[in-house]
Length: 447
Image 1 (tube, rainbow, N blue to C red):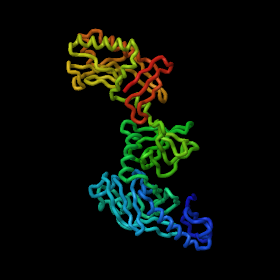
Image 2 (spheres, one colour):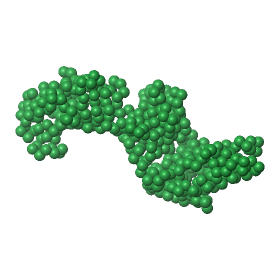
Image 3 (tube, rainbow, N blue to C red):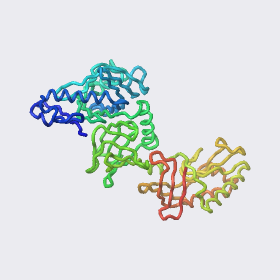
Image 4 (cartoon, one colour):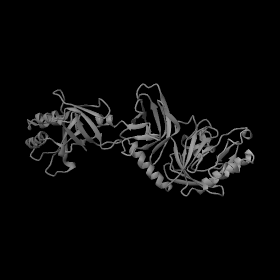
């Protein structure tokens, strides 16, 4: 199959044999016709393609080149042979109280011949027009437009190329590159799958990522907003590109091709093992900075007791018994890494204990021993306990009766000292994982 390339050239008649190739007709069919007639016939092919898609089209829409404060917008389109089109979306710029709600709106479209093909949406459409509306700021709700330029959206889109599965478009006034790609499910189904992917790869827990080609490494931040910062470092950067993207059920796609080193990229999909996002040619990877998150998270991650060494299990039992000296109803519930609760809390090793004979999560409290935790290299976790590590107020209170409690807690902390390789249980939003010492002598699991 050949890809139809279209260019807006004023001297079409000078290059009649070079402008168009066809997916549905032999090239020789048009060679005896004028350039204008060939454009018309290619327009007919495009219209047939648009109207024959059984599930309609995903419309990846970007505002103009000065509109990078906006993300890419996912819309949907059903084209009909009578010139009608139904557009749909749940984007945040929908008006009339529909922002974020799935909305459909019908209007008309046309395929114009203007030294090349133009897909034109010439009448108001509640889904598309808020991105195009050029009215003055005082006349538009919610400050959607500025200086009479609106969001620099376009309703007339130059057709750059098309094939059986996609149409590449460019805004006639503001130059934004947009794309129609055949939808393989219902519109709501596409939204659901896209939201699921977005929430996985761009959770609220991790907001920064490595971008690497195996030699060079850059960074992106703010992906969840649909517009991210691309820079050579995260602080005091020189390069600071702002790039808009549309999320997809497989990952995301940016408006225009970009690069790292000699490698280009435009679309990323989740790798088969869910460990990273991979570019379309496989040369570039985006890796969530989960290693930094593992070293700095404050949520409590529990140890899997089945990985305890005999020494750790013995200490666990002794700590539980020692707690009962403070109160006969106290007993150890679990040990974890995170932030202890209460006044003068510490970040490090956290011991959660039951405060009642009714052993429920509601009847618990914590005490903690500080650890020095860091990420000295990607995927590595350094646990350092020493005599200077502080304890929290709860432990200081408990040890007035449970006199050996601090010694036992510090002894448990000392068993963790070491440098570990980490395999997270989720590469984009970890809640624990497998920690194996670099010399292979010990391991533990947080969950």
